Amino acid sequence: MKKISIIGTGLSAIFSAIHLRKNTDLEINLFDKARGLGGRLATRRAEDGKFDHGAQYFSIERISNLPEIQMLINEGIISNIEDKDIYFSPDGMTNIAKKLLMDFNIFKEHKLVSIDKENENYKLFFENGSTFNSDYIIMSCPMPQSLEILNKSKIDFDNNLIKALEDLNYFPCIVVMIKSEIKLSNLDKHIGTDVDSKNISWIGDNYRKKVSSIENYYTIQCSPEFSYENFENEYDETNEKLKHDMEKIFGSNYQILSNHKWRYSIPKNFYQGDNSLVINEKDFLGLCGDIFTNGRFDGAITSGLSIADKFLKNELQK
Ligand SMILES: Cc1cc2nc3c(=O)[nH]c(=O)nc-3n(C[C@H](O)[C@H](O)[C@H](O)COP(=O)(O)OP(=O)(O)OC[C@H]3O[C@@H](n4cnc5c(N)ncnc54)[C@H](O)[C@@H]3O)c2cc1C
Image 1: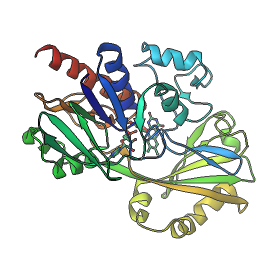
Image 2 (image 1 turned 30 degrees about the vertical axis):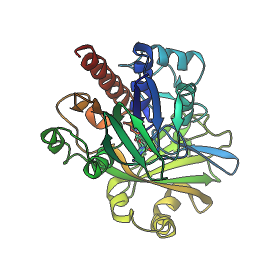
Image 3 (image 1 turned 60 degrees about the vertical axis):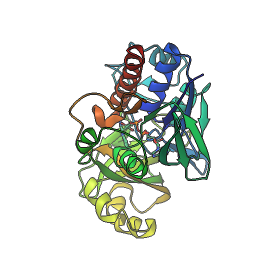
Image 4 (image 1 turned 90 degrees about the horizontal axis):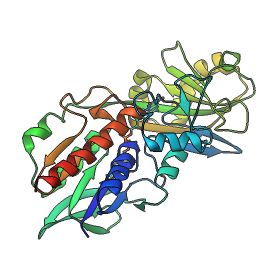
């Protein structure tokens, strides 16, 4: 049985895996450097409550016809606010990935470092020392991370295609997870709100989304400018710098329960050519991810389906 290795367990990886499983008899293996599943769909427990600290909500307008989306709705894994096209996951966004990947072979804490060619196969080298042979590869990492791997690899791919990817980048985002004594009344009806401040751009209400069963668990997204300036700082220093903004929002009775830094949060610019990219057709090597589409939940899914479609067409032509 031929093997395909999919790097990442975010939405684009998940949907490429689902599409390939429906249409091939390949052995499909997914690898992620992280301990959890879902990539930028991320949920964290702190004290007795929970926070979504990656993607917060999403539109299904362009993906509602997918059976997996209907299944997620029917099983209550995702639901919407007041009949609007604003969807979230009541038990936390990570649950979407956990549900969709339930029956797949997954290797967590496997950070891909480089790829070589050995005989007819690709040989994947992971940071933890393990190696894995594969006939085909799909990479779904944020683009700078995929390029770093390709630069260290001894494999054939179209270098001209890679050039167009070198300028692609993402905004960083520092996230702060807050337990507040007071309830933010402007969030009574909404799951989040923009903040008009230089340092903070958005607040999300995890209780309103039913992610947290405890009230007043808020996720703060810092502005791209603040995140850039403070990305390399220790969290204590960052949190101290945010004190004034935080006190304006929450008064003095709040606690920071956790922080997270996303080096690659939302794409700054996008690949213009197509929804995914094949850089080696002979021994299939493809790239996907939200940077090929719109930098959002639905776009990541579109990109994953696109690279799987290209694999199917490519193999049919052989
Ligand atoms: C703070 C934040 C807020 C957001 N808010 C929203 C929102 O409200 N609505 C919305 O629609 N979208 C939002 N997004 C964007 C949305 O999360 C992404 O568009 C989508 O999740 C991207 O999926 P992906 O598969 O392209 O990439 P990812 O989810 O990033 O998946 C890439 C995977 O590759 C793995 N990986 C990377 N390098 C390696 C390696 N060397 N070896 C193995 N694995 C590796 C990563 O661990 C990760 O699991 C937000 C993102 C962030 C960070």
